[in-house]
Length: 385
Image (cartoon, rainbow, N blue to C red; front, side, top):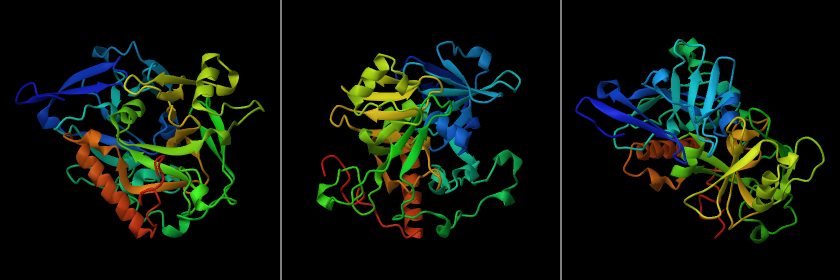
């Protein structure tokens, strides 16, 4: 976003592969643009993110060439337009409104010095069960504006309907140590990706024998906040959330076909159009050799991240997990609360302050809930540890 004169700036949005770049002029007096947040099940499973946020694109949709984007019918009133090459969800297309206006996902916006957006109200927090990411987004804005949380659609509520700071209460959460269930579903919005992740059994292993992605205290999977530009751009959200898992614990939800057990096998299955992989496809990174980003070719959901250094251990997007205890899936995951990894990508731009505030809020929430720092926060939980 660069200034064109004293009164206007250029708002820029682009996908990961940069095949799609959009610009629009906006008056400085109109900034920051409101960016409502949605935590509903569908938004999480159509992107892989823990929530979505978007701003109304300043240009009329008739002036925006979206012909190179693929459309997914999100609802009868809304389409999601995404890059078919790299999967970046670029716009919501509001087909039921006059002129079919567009809403740009905030993660696609350029990270300039001038902050173009303000996160506003948070809708459908009730869908998360456990509060999801809403617990660290209330004070996520660079200007200090607080984002109230609502059980349903915020536009249908009054300020008095906002959820209290301590919702949900601690006794309603699974907590740091407790585990429930032996498996967890991984599924996208269109169900073209429909998988089951089994819990690994590590009771016979000493702590020093455990895989690096398994918390030695809880045997839950290492889960991170990622602030890198590539993950942000692929998923269309400013912060991405990944959990590390071993592919040998993955299976298809339907049928008895054997699922690939490495990043290389998964790529080969996709290349030969093996039915077991469903609608999964991939984007090969142009900046990091050997990195593949797997996504749903139908609805755009970011699914897996894989690299050559650890072909059997992949990252899965937390927003695709369907855990009975809630969106954070604490029964399966060990969260590095209070730490955004690769946050240096945001330095020099408006997202740096956003990251700082999220880190502070996540740490505050961890302390209030009496969760200890997990082993990754203490220096473990990496391939080098």
